[in-house]
Length: 113
Image 1 (cartoon, rainbow, N blue to C red):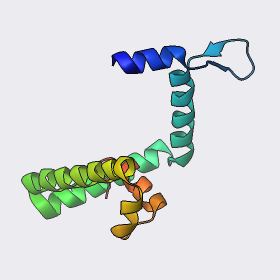
Image 2: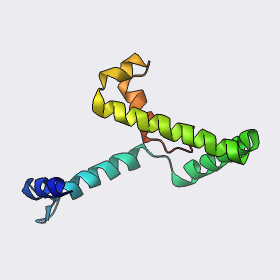
Image 3: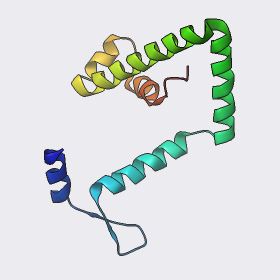
């Protein structure tokens, strides 16, 4: 935390669009990430309805304990893919995924198929 704090204090600030205010780097990169995530997302009602439908279908097929087991497996798999991005992105090709496919998989929450 100390190193991150020191680096963020030394990083250059960016100028907010249409104003004179300076935005710290972490805040501006967060805004960019949120805008990208919003642009990719479906309308909330559609996504929520689809998620609920998939959860109920999995619950009927797996049962409550099986559902949590499947969710844990998805979470671990997506966590491992995220680790591969950091360690060596070239390894993602070895498992038969493109970088875009792997990034889309990592971005999904554990309850989505």
